[in-house]
Each structure stands twice: as structure tokens, then as C-alpha cells.
Length: 219
Length: 163
Image 1 (tube, rainbow over the protein chains, first blue to last red):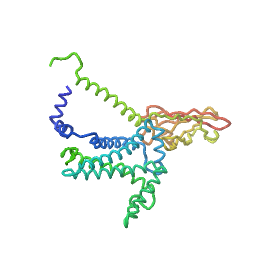
Image 2: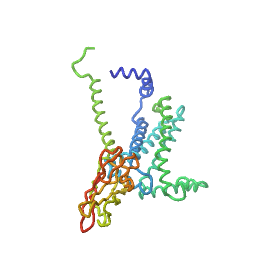
Image 3: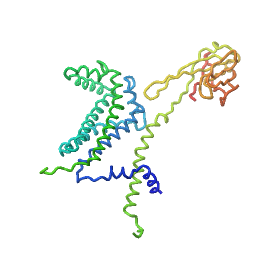
Image 4: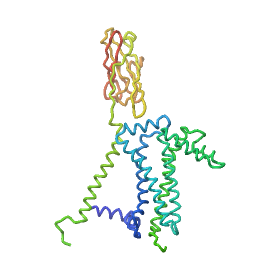
């Protein structure tokens, strides 16, 4: 029965072909370091799902942000769990994405024909750091406020246009409700959209080109 | 291949994965659903005797609106709700007081006493209640709700209860 349903669907959707290409592709003999890309993708999905759940209760305004998180932690069933996963998952994702970059670098997997995979990976690494930076402000507690004060101030040290960058980041000269709202928008719309799109390109390239083998001594 | 009476390796793996899958689905799914429906599972009891001022302030034979507010905590903020009660005294007696909720029993719009109509029309779906709160016309399923009242030292109290 299940087989009949699958056959019916496959005749119309051609999923078997997609499955063969995506999951049944040939790979060289590699080691556990080669799982970091999948781990990054998994963490992105986890962060996305828990983030969507957090947005049910979180309110990005100076009046409500802190209290709405207190409510998530103490008032909502399993709120501590959802926020905990999002909080620790964020740290883990930065570590895993960074380790994934290091593996690619040390195995020289960025060389021809995989330069574009590397470049999209650079976008993904920076976007992940951007998620960390914007997400850090959202709890709107002392640590968040001062971390963002310092972070935007560092951006302000860029020669000539630093002052302008600082004002763009903060949405004005001060850290304010405008800053919180734009960090929130970047955190839940702009960067996730960029990351999702870039992951699509990145994975298309991985599947199209296959993964590199581990370099030997005389390579 | 002859059918073996024993569970094949493939069937065993399929069954194990299935059981583990259901188990993991429950571990993820139950907190997720609990998280979403959490505020709906908490109800706050609202019950109090609200002082409505001296009884003698209320004119006999004419419904008079008495308004008050109640504060609740919803999530991270205080919610202030306004309530209206129509007080109708039919005689000088302290027990002859009718306190009607102004919430229409159809879909909770607020009704207002209209002296020229001698009725409580509801603005939403053209319902009308008479002076005692009975349905005259329109879709409401039951008369206007009544509150318990008492008089202590000349002060009228309305027994507020959250519906």
C-alpha cells in the first residue's frame, strides 16, 4: 500500500531522482570532520524553528522585550526549553560553522572547482556572526544593551565612514527603540532570508561538484 | 527466499526506527504544543464585591449605569477591563435591586438603556432586551446576566463574577 502511494507520487513528482542525487551520491572516504556542514544545516533549522516559536511571545520594544522574555522563561510551559535551545544553539552554531570553515581550509577543499562553494560559505559565516550580534541585543538586559553599545561603537571606528555606519546600525546616534526594532527585523527577516538562500546555492554546489577527498602527502 | 519465522534484520531495523521516531516526535511535539497553548490553560478567577456607592443615589424605576474596572495580569502586562452594570431599583426596599450586566448575551457587544424605547438595544445585531433584561427581539440566546447585590450601611455592593 505504502509502496503504491510512493509510486503514484514518484510518477508525478520524480522524488526518487531527487533522492538519488541528494542522498545517494558517491563520496570519497572521509572522516567525521566532514559532518560539520550537515551539523551547521541542522543547527540552522533548529534555530529557525525555536526562533519562530519564540516570536509567538517575544515583543521587540523597550517596554516589553525584557518582561516578555521573563514571561517566556517563567510563565509559558516549556518556554525555558525553547529559549534554552535557541540560546545554546546559537553559541553552538557559531562554533560548528567556524569549525566547518577550518576543516575546509586545512583540507584545501576551497580550490578549483569549489571556489564558489567557499565564497558562499564566507557569506554564511558572516551572516551567522550577524545573527549572533543582532540576537544578542534582543533580551534587552544590561548585558545586551552594553554589548551592543560597544559593538556599534567598534563599527564606528572605521575611518571616514565609521560615524555613518554607527548611525545606520543604531538607527540614530543613540541606542534606542529604533535600534531594537531594526536588530529584530535583521535577526528574523533579513539574515535568515540571506542564509536560507545562500545555503541553497552552497548545497547545490556541494551536490553538483561532490565533496573533495582528503589530500595525501604528495598532493 | 523462504520466509523465515524469525524477524528479519531489515524488519527489525524498520520497527526500531519507527518506535524511536514516535518517541522522539513526542519529545519534540508535546513541549511545542504545550508552549503554544500555554496561556489558554491558565484561567484567572475574578470574583469580588464591588462598592457601587450609596443606594439612595440610584433613581427608582430608571436603569442607571454603574461602571468599574478590573485589572488582571496577562502575560507580561496588566490588562484593565471596563465593566458596566445597570442598576434598577423597583421600590425603596434594599432587596428590590436588579443589577444587569451590559454585555449582550449574543456576541458580547455592549447594550445601552434607551429611555424612549424602554429597552436595551444592542448596536451589533439589532437585538433588544426589556427593562428586566429579557429578550424582546433578535438573536440573543438568553436574558442579560444578573449580578447579586447587597446593601451594607446604605452602600450598594455588586457581586462581580468573571463569566
